[in-house]
Length: 135
Image (tube, rainbow, N blue to C red; front, side):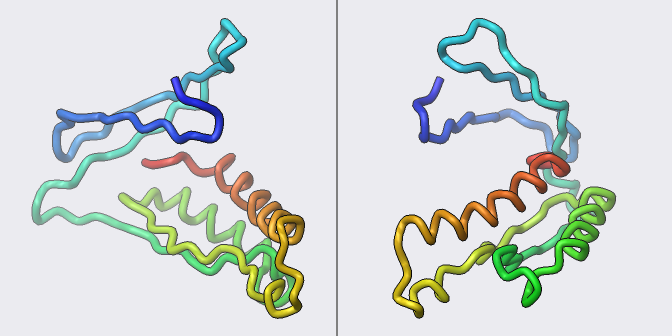
């Protein structure tokens, strides 16, 4: 059980190398009796030494810069390719939204940052609905 706004960390140990594990997240609100179940996902532990693996790297998505740096159709195609390729691990470099323009216009406040991050959150929601947390 965790408190609102606090991440929950679960230690999963004694995993075998080069093995696929399946999991399903079940959760509920503290005032509810029934648990909701998320779709089944899986991950693969470290491959055997000398075997091949694949990975992906993503950064600088900036969905708040529509028409300048961000093209939704290209981002969607990229995420669909990631899902299809199922890399062994995927690195998100960050820098997915920018508050620099707000700062430079002397308009950096909670409301403008919330708007900027809500644009990114819509992108993250799209990603989360299509990509499992890990493979």
